[in-house]
Amino acid sequence: MTGIGEAPAALERGRPVMLVIPPAPAQAGALWDLVSKPSAGALSAVIICADAEAAVEWTDAAPSGLRLHPVTGLARAARLLSAGAVDILAGAPGDLTALVSRSALKLEHVPTVVIAWPEGFGSGETAAPIDTLLTELKDARRVVLSWNPAGVEAFCERHARRPHVVGDLPVSEDARPLPPVGPARYVLAPRDRRAGALRSALDALDPSRVLVWHHGDPLPAAGAGTVICADLPGRTELSTLTGAGDVVVLCGAGQLPYLRSIATPLRPLPLLTAVQDAADRAAALRARVAARLAQGDVDAELALLAPLFERFDAAEVAGALLAVAREVVPGAPREAAAAAAAAGPPVPQGWMKVFVNVGLKDRAAAKDLVGALIKEVGLEKTDIGRIEVKESFSLVDISAASAERAVAKLAGLTIRGRRVTAKLDR
Image 1: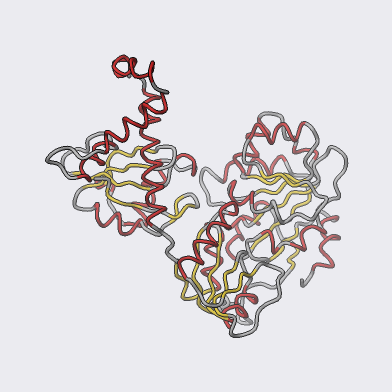
Image 2: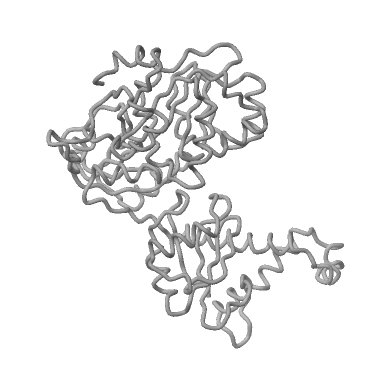
């Protein structure tokens, strides 16, 4: 990489270093020579990521011998830090701030901080934890990873002023952004779901010839057929891959803006199947039952079922009740009986309830759904009613005149890194 030889000396002089690389830890090989060597029981670096999903991406990227831990749970991260079992900690600003507030993370002793692709950090609520962290890390050597330096100039002015730049800027000789290199399709899949996404992509495409490419693999020659990229390719790599065959990239939500900058046309590869749809319905039903149990007030029902509990296991009774609820009611279609079993609160007149497969487990909140409906779908605030965010899905009341349009335009969007499936909950 251009300028890498002078980077260690720049860090020693207190000057920040910027590595211009695609937003994928697998592409960050030059970083490890800039990170302080680990010492017993002490952190050698903290990597600040956009979110927990981005932190997990670092799991497989660290060289062997470096104990890198992504913060996906505060209790476990605090325990590992207390035991001195972590060399490098990767986490979202909010999670790292929470560890600091618990006194589990001592930032004043961290020698190097890596700010991983601040293009995806956003602003508002996200900016405050980052500012707090970097203020406490004022003595740490700073390495910024960026794929679009022009887009993070304001951030660098505050936190990494006049960095030593390593790598080639994505601009032409006349300072214009480089054009995309070729077409591609993509599948949004977090790192821990890539294997399943790969299988689904193969099932959807059913190619006669296929090559699964990982970063570091030899680049194929022309005629490779379908090329599925299990890792995010860089600009030069994608140029060669698109010349070899039809390219499908498995990527995270935070990597999509970069992919859009190097690939045109870029289209999603639909993977929804009847099996996935059934799984979503089953998860929705389980969530409704769990919510009803949490609400309580089922004493009368328990008293009614008490004689059955003496003869059968409680799980058998629950299964039988579900089967009875799904039986065809005389004079009513099967679909109506099944819908009655999973029916939620009544929707006000003039509104329709929309099922969205994003919930609390995806770290989604009502404001995320409102933002998508207003900014991406184009609804007015008056078109959006009550929003119920459950564990694995959400239910949104939409004005009857706009419900069909909302379902159509929500499909394929991403909320909190998950590709959206939406349908009318009848």
